[in-house]
Image (tube, rainbow over all chains, first blue to last red; front, top):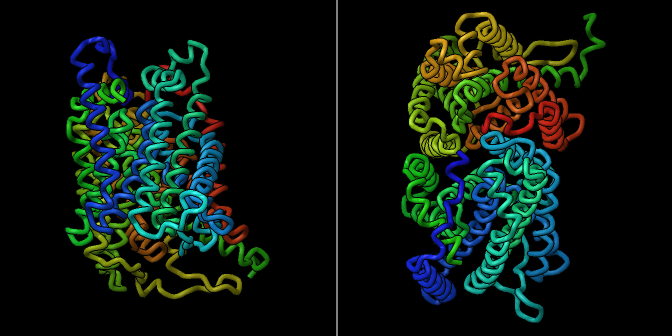
Length: 328
Length: 292
């Protein structure tokens, strides 16, 4: 499995065609961001709120990608930290409705939860890592139904305020723009993170862990740090989810959410932008196309997982990964 | 009754825990062998249990004939389902993550199919009429079916442990768990063993669904619950180990019944701690020689 996650060589950086590709990607990203900002004026409120949900899922997919794309360890429990973040935001909502404070608190709470539960996960690798994170995620889900305010019924929160002095965001368009801005900030932070020495060490773990250990690095500690960061990002996604739906329930940590995040990361094959795009596509398949097929969204999702397993995505992966790592 | 000192609400709950634990063992034994032999973490394992529970709801009519029919159907569905999963993961050998995705996809499609066909509400399955009543245990009423279930499940446990640890078939299975390459080199047909274990695990899970339906009835979401608890049993018991799975299943059964009665809400923490302890104690330097 690790071979699928090993980043391709970047030896071609100096060639001119790649430089052109970089410009092309920059132009394309600019267009995508422009369209994303203009979206609330282009489509109806339902699609806008769907797009906001898709952005939340994109943030969660980045969290999964940090682990599977960089460190080569597939997590199947990221929704648990989203839930921790969401409940942190919902609890804070009784004190303040300032969105950025929710976001910071949820990020911190997600990081703490991941640092504690990560002690379990980093003891194992590969498929067993997936199994353990899945177990931990489901246990958090089960514990949430017992402990959180509102129980399994969930709890409602008031609309958040983007900045002090602004009115609460009630209309889907404003919420969407707030979530978009937060997603871009988080995305920028993640992309900076992927260019650090730390990220290189994580890639080393994915490629050949004993070699990294032999170089004197404590790989389990590195993985725990990555797991904590991934938990922080998932926690931030939780705060955004509360801003979008103004409601949180333990069902937000259902297995399906973690599975979509992991699948999106795998479709993105190592690229953060790819993971975001895939998350948006999967949410579209589940909610929008599933709505057209009278509620058979989960069949559609199952079919996309099957397609993901059988299609030769490894051969298609190279293109996307190279572009992302040099172009953004 | 001389045992009356022993019979109190807690021992009655503990008896429930034994039933729950044995049920989990029958399911998790398949999962742990499938992982040990074929290296597949089958996300569709809970789905097979749910299929069995729906078979029981559909066919069990309160008589022995209905139960017999349901069991026969369970063996058939389990074998077909297991063979189908074996065929599905066959092209994905050495790509464990893709195997997880494929079985997850199957689980999703099946779950959607179940809720379309059987509806979204939980169904309750009545045990056969002959076992429907309750028996007095030192002043407490206890369902006869649950006692019968414990007996049948204990029989399955004994048979399974005999099959894996004493029979020639079991020796082949354990050889493939221990060292697939060496097993293949000595002439064992590892591919056929892998498929057979998937079929066997499927039959066990669907049969457990039929027998367990009066205990944990069919409802949407039961597949995920069963999958998680049997996964925890596998992790705590050690992947690929039958005896470990038995001990872990009985422990998890107690945590989920007696533990919940004693300290409500602590079950998740206890199970997570158990996984942590099991992984720490059995912690092998992760990648020495086998890149998992």
